[in-house]
Figure (spheres, rainbow, N blue to C red):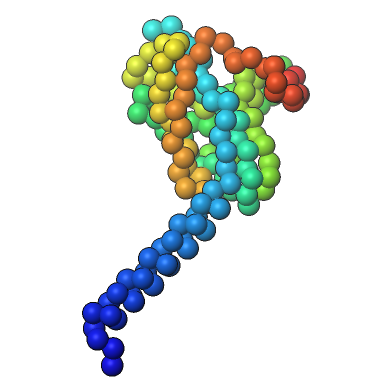
Length: 162
Ligand SMILES: [Cu+2]
């Protein structure tokens, strides 16, 4: 029989080894990158706002399920759909992110709609936004508020499908 103290130390070592392996696995599965984040500055009287960004899924297929921010009562994933001659916004409950896909949230396309703003969207400030996925751990990002879309220079492909 092993002295119980040595046994405890060995078990502790085993646990640390296992949890390190789990942490490393989780990290390598976090294949979603969020970039080019911005929100459009709005007049102080506005009750709604929009957020745009680029999602790159470097890993396996996933789904964006929900977005939220403390500065608005609700945050929804919206897209635009053609209805007769009108381009109308429509809320979607989840967004497919195929493996190695890139999805652009941009004016006229996907966007996050903020309803019931609790603070005004003033250019130069920023606010937190969290994104929930089916598989990837929840992501917290900081959204800078800008007067207009960031420069498209150096972003080939950003003007597609218009
Ligand atoms: Cu919308």
